[in-house]
Image 1: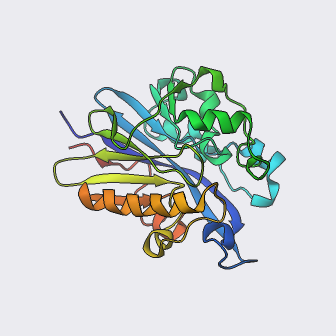
Image 2: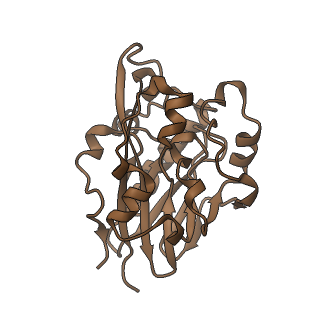
Length: 252
């Protein structure tokens, strides 16, 4: 079977306080961070990991995050760069249901959605401090196909989901195997930045700080075991060095 093709879709950027990137560090320092999703062309279907944010929603509900998103950076715009439309996606994997990871869900009319069932509960009834995180309810959570993976849940050959809770109750990270010698491990919000990984500093926004640290350590362990490059979610310095769609990884 040929290696999957992996595209990193650029959905623009937002701004948060540095203390939300690195807990208790840099209070009062604004940080602009990237938002991206991962498209996988696999022999068994077209798979999307997260779907970015919806500009209209952020401008209305979270304008203080100063969104910057061009028409090309919408989900439809990014998919068009590689010859697809939202309705072509077969499986939507949500790392979790925060607004900057679900903005395109409502457009994926033919996709089955895979998410940890704990995320559905928190979307419907978030804790008070989670309400802005779970503020985008534009998609129908009753249509979601709920999955609880164990530590090693293979969605399809070469695509594995790992439970990495702490940032939220039901967070998933994703491993994609390219060949026998290398893989790509997408942390999702279990690790915002490379500094988060290096220093094991969790994000300021979290549900369980102890679980968050354990998940960072688990990601580093998984990267070693699977010979994987580890991709944090919101690190502008790292993101600018990666190849973005229409360029791709794998596909040999």
